[in-house]
Image 1 (cartoon, helix red, strand yellow):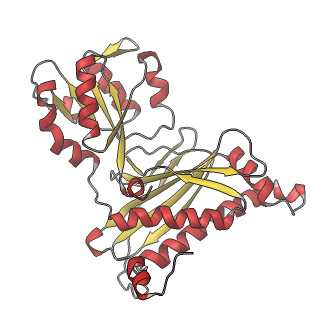
Image 2 (cartoon, rainbow, N blue to C red):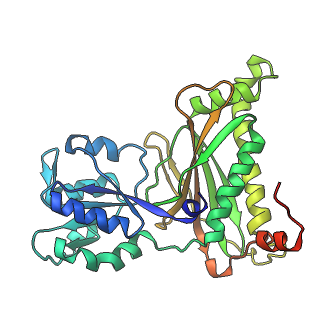
Image 3 (cartoon, one colour):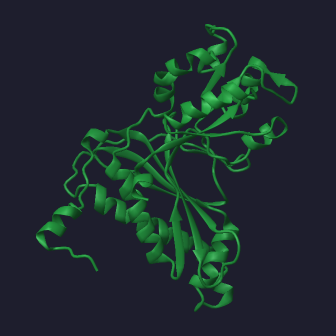
Amino acid sequence: MENEAATIQVKVLVLDTDAEAGEQLKRFCDGHDLVPVKVAPENLMSVLRSSIDLGAVFLAEGFESHSLSGFRLAQELNRIRPELPIFFRTAEPLVLDEGQRRFVRHAYTLGELADITAVVRESLFSLVYPEALVRGIVDLTLQALNGQFREISVVAEAPIIVRDRLIYGEVYSLIPLEASWCRGYMMLQIEERSLRRLQLHQLADMEQIHKDSIRAINNVFSETTNLIWGAFKNRFISYDDNTLAKMTQVPIVINHPQHYISFGSEDPQLCFRYHLWDNVLQQGDPIELHQRFVFNLNWSPELFNENQANVESMFASGELELF
C-alpha cells in the first residue's frame, strides 16, 4: 500500500485497433508509469466530454470515430480536450509541419516507440513530486477524513497526474497553499448527492431541516477542507517561512456547464481519489472524493522539507512503540 501511495501514474487513452501495436503500447505503458485505457470508437466523443481523468492520448492514424480519422480526428480531439497531448502513430516516419504541431505533440512509428520516452516524460511528468510529499498527502488526508466522519471506511487509490481541467461533481472547495517551495491550491470535489448521503449519518443529532440544508452541506465540506489544509501546513510548511511577500496571483476561470476550471497554467495537477463507505447507513457504491494539488504559481521541490520527525528514529529512541 505504501509503495502504491508513492508511485505516481498517468492515465492515457489509447486509440489503436492494431493488435501488435496494442501489445507494444501496453508494454511501453507498463514500463513508464502509464495506465492505458481504451474506448469503443462510437463512445469516444462522449467519454472525452465526461469528467474522466486523462494525461494524454495515443492515437493511431488508422483509428476512425464518428467518420473522422487521421489528422482530422486528432484536430477534433484537440478541440474537445486541448490540454491533452496527442502522440500520433503513423505507418511511415513523418515530420510534423507547423500546422500539425498545433494539435499533435509528437508523431512516431511503431519502430520508433522506444525512442519517444523522452518526449513522453517531458510532456507528462514535467513536475517532480518528492516521495515524502506524495506519501504524506495520502496519510494526512486519510487521518483528516477519519477524524471528520465517524464510522466510515476509506481507501485511497494510487495518485495520478492529470492535464485536464475538468471538475468532478457539483461541490468543490479551493484553499491556497503558500510556502517557499510551492504556491497554488488544494481542491476537493464531490457530488452533492454523495455529500448529502454521507452527512445524513454524520449529523444524525441535528434536526432534519438543518442537516439537509445547503449551509450544513457547505459547512461539512468546508471543515473537511480546513482539516486537510491544516495538516498539510503543519507537516510541510515551515513556521519561519518568510518568503511569501510580494506575491502575484492569476485569474481562476470556472465554467460550470462544462465542468471546467483553469488556474492559468499548463502544468499538470497531482490528483488523489478516495472511496468512502458509511459503515452504518450506506449501501451499494462508495462515495468518491477527488483531491487535486495545483502548484500553478510556484514549484521548487528542491526547497521542500517535511516537518514530521523521522518515524524510524523515534522507534529506535523508544519515543514511539508499536501498539
